Length: 331
Image 1 (cartoon, rainbow, N blue to C red):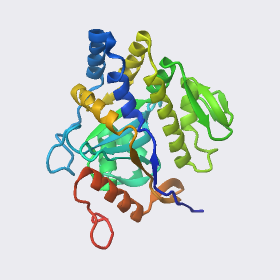
Image 2: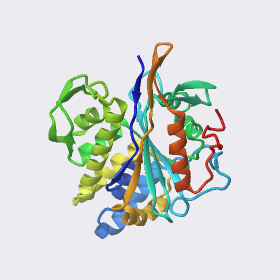
Image 3: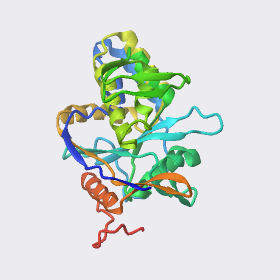
């Protein structure tokens, strides 16, 4: 039985504390009184994480763009890499668009079960399967083809990295929205009670992974992911111990890949300071839960895809790909 999800796009005044900015703040926002030592640590960490894409620019770009100079998009990819029989799948996809001139920022969480065309396979499938088919490159291609917009940069991290970061920070404090339970990665059940709770890495991972007991399914899960990421950023900003800074930077660098260079990271620090208290757009797709050949999918409405594309196109300052009928030209 199909169930329609109508999730309105919301505009909230809140600090932009999502994972990419947590990385930036962790690497370049720490107290600079540590001088040369801290810069050396940051440089090594950035060097270990830097991984270029197998292309010069997106096929949806006419000219190359630079982070900090031009309007760009960044795809944050959280990967399940604990499977023994394959490369894993993308467990979380968050698309961030930012414009350094207008200071506009928008974020879009893409449901992992979104049914879309996977170019490497020549068929439609769940968007999180793209990672198993072709890694970061295939995942970026799937997101680009879904919205007919460029993905210029990416940040990829894995489950172990998420746990390590939380543990190195000494845990995080979150507001649990309701009572629920979730099996941890070690196979043991973890129980959560509504209200404020301090979580270690294992508990924080279970907190963001649960879907079955959430009445909003993937959308409720996305909200908990953002709650956890904001808590991580808050904790990272409060670090005063050199040892903790060092360990946290190592945790990031060992489990993260990105095509954002050190110079670009440094340049984003000023941008973050300018927009952290500004209004941002938090976008979400509207669509339907459905089963095709007994497989569950989230099928986004064409109108919702078009609305999201239009908003992101405005921020990126590129012409959208919608014709006068409101239909996508590639359908």
